[in-house]
Structures are given as structure tokens and as C-alpha cells.
Length: 422
Image (cartoon, rainbow, N blue to C red; front, side, top):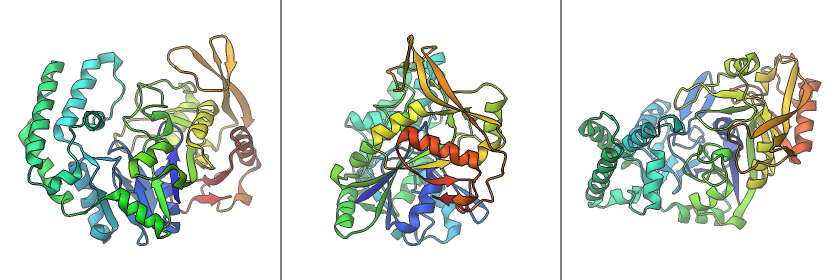
């Protein structure tokens, strides 16, 4: 069976840390979608690590890490990740395997992303400008460049045809995008050379055989469920399926081979970039969450918008993913709030609803809050569930009742040791 680990909000929930914590129990960590617009932050031994494409189990000797077919890879960023890992004495060749069916992000994909976003003006969706959307467009348009193509001499011809097409599209947008393609291509080819040093696999066959051999596999998602291309807050979403179904298509895993579905959420809510956010705070409480939680994008550095926990959206994500266990992150950030609020319903077009409607745009949605007592205790030194303050345990019990799923892990700090198992 394959266990899934997914974010249940708008990304940035802390998936990287939890994968790192859980990796000791798994033989294979497999990333199934997304690209380097995701930043998975891990912290241990006093060092902070940010991974963008490489699975979060790479620092464990026991685990093989697989970049699946559903992922899109930027060779330039990938090379930088590998260079950053070089000082940690990791056997990259045997520990990191790349699916031949994963698509490649070209320099012109990034340029096309920038041109498209610039052309939208005020209607921009908040793209990270990493070329993710255009790469998935080429994938579905059936003319993308894949990792497996690099094993054939014809890949440069495919590359040239695709890059030429992109330049024509950039001209069509008629926006001022300054670039030196020769310089970008030189960096790209350096990345390709590094990528070709790694082990390419038919990942669906590899995963199938691993299951037959009884290997324990954890599928790692990027972004969050509310950014899913189908079920997220469209159009302010990413370009892949971030929900549980994405693991099946992004790794070639049959639905009946999915085991536990581990859902990760913050004790409050954050969002990067544009898009609706019903519980967003514009007061001192929101500023405090951002400051204490160090809420800046691991990939972009952009400040994250902060707000109270939205149970309507979270319940929706739990249902869509079939979540079996929950993990609550950043409980420590809420220490010091005298009163906490949890959104349990929406006022929507004159009615009170408890499900996520088609649109959250504009003033159509007003949160309905339940207030709860906060706690003042510093959680960061706590190591057992028994030491947690009563108000936090009441908060957890309330969420478990509302979501009808147990919360198995409570994170009380960024380090892998600051993790309480319940």
C-alpha cells in the first residue's frame, strides 16, 4: 500500500517537516506533482533546508527518493538544489531517482509565465513565475519535453521547436519582457548536464515492483488542496492535481493501493498570492500570526496573508481527499492569543452554509465564527501530549469533532524534534 501526505489548505502547511519526521518509517518517498513553485522547509541540527523539487526524505539514509511523472522539473533550479546538498555527503545517484515521464521546464516557459501574468494586469493570479503553468499547458497540449527525451539525440531538436513556439507566443502578448535567451539557455544546458548524471527510471514500474515487494511508500504532495486545478479556488490555483487523486496519476498508483491519507493543516490559515480568503485578518492579530509564524514564502519570499482557521474549507479538503489522519502545524504560533476564532460556517447569499460554494469571490461570503479560549504557555519546549495546555487540548478536541478525523500529530516548532505524537 502507498500512504499519501497532503496539504489541506493553500499550501505552506509544513509538509516538508512532517515527511522528514515520518521518513524513518518508509522505504520510498515519492513526489507526485507540482514543480519548484513549492518550497518544503526542513529544520534539524540547527540548520534550515529548503527543497523545491527533491523529496523531503533525502536526508535519511534508509529512504529512496523518487521524483514522479506528475512533477515538472526546472533543470536550473534542480542543479542548485543538488549543489546545496553536495556538502551533506548524500549518495545522490542511488538515493534520488527521476521518472522518465516527468516534464521539463524550459527557460522560455518561465518567460511565457511572466508575459502572461504581466498581460493580465490587475487580474493577475499571483503566479510564482517559475514556468509551471506553461509547462503543464505543453504537457496537456502533447508537445512537452520529458526527462526520457534526454536519452535520445533528438531532444535538442524538440527543445528548439518548443522554444521557438514560446518566443512567438511571448511576442503575441505584446508586453515589455526583457531577456537574454542565450544566457538563459547556457544555464539551462548546465542544468541538463547535471540532471543527466542522475538515474532515470520508469517510475510507475518501479513503484509497482516496490509494492509487490512489500516496500513502505509515502507519496508526498506539493502545494495544498485548495490550489488543486479542479477543486481549488479557481482560477487562483496551481496547474496540477494536488489532491489525493493526483497521487494516482502522478505516480501510476492504482486507487485500491492507497492506504492512509495523512492531511496536514496549520492551526490557523495562510495564503500566498492572489485569490479569495474569507478568514483573512487585516488587524494586529493577523500581523502577529505573520510575525511569530515567520510567514514568508519558502520559494518566493513573499509575505503570506494570515487569518483564523477556516473549518468550512478544511472540511471540504478532508472530504475530497478521504483524509484518515490529521496533523496540526504551528500550534505554537497561537500562544498568547486570549481568544481564538474558528470559522465553522459561511453566510452566503442570505443563507448559512457549511460547505464550500462554487465561488468565494468578492463579498459573497462572510465567515461565521466560534470563539474559543486561547492559551499563554510557550509550547516550543513541550514534548508530550500530556504537557499541552487545557485550552489547546480543547481546541484540538473541537476540531476533531467538527472534522470527524483524529489529529495524530501536533507540531510545536519548526525543528523535527518539536513534534508531539498523540
